[in-house]
Length: 194
Image 1 (cartoon, rainbow, N blue to C red):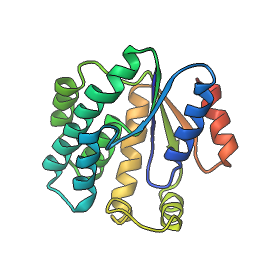
Image 2 (cartoon, rainbow, N blue to C red):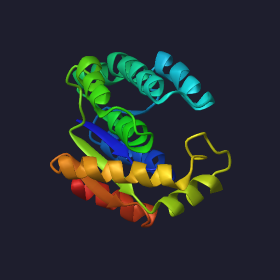
Image 3 (cartoon, rainbow, N blue to C red):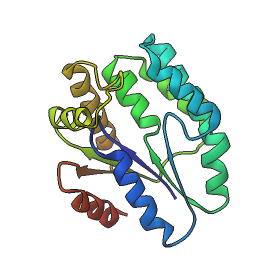
């Protein structure tokens, strides 16, 4: 099973991905991974993406270049070996951030999904949702701020709206979880939704 966790900054995706992977590891092999990243070439591209602002199309292309490496080198082999894959972000984040947040081209996003992922798509996606201001405050409390976290509140509102739009379009795949709850409650909600 391929499971992704999505959401805005500070929603707790990384923490909950680790918790979910630990739970699933009691039943068999699990790959815990992230985007951008998850394979050597994809990790190198992550550094480029976080280093500076890019033209929205170039940024989307970089995300999909990293994702293609991730799928080819990590996700597809793990799934073929019978492992569960838990991924902190995937293509839905590129839609939310580059299309919703930056106003990028949705048709280009769709073309890149079709042309690079070869049918590798999550069976379940958890949207860890919380008010933008609370998520950004949580992210700032971690210390170092990345370039996405530093963008204006309007950008983050558009990202949140884009996540909700995707969840509404594919209700069979998506589950929206209130990420403002205590950690254990968020984990329990995810496990119940599996």
